Image (tube, rainbow, N blue to C red; front, side, top):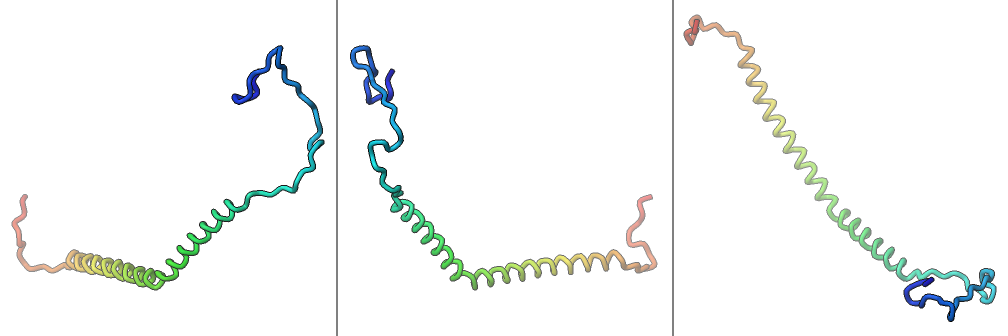
Length: 108
């Protein structure tokens, strides 16, 4: 039975011998050390990108406020124009002026 592809399969002439041993029976373990360099580099680059984005936002903050105010002013002006138009139409619809003669002949 092959254990992995790099070890040849065992046979009757070359059997594998399995030994049962306790964990770290023959070796003194070293304290665990994780390779922090990769993690540190990735965290450092993430922090740098976040810092750059924050600096860009801080630089653009006055412009963002100005743009927001300009957009609000444009929307208010367009709503005022629509309101004026509707108000004129309502005044025309509400006016009850009798001119004495039908301006158009009725179709009955």
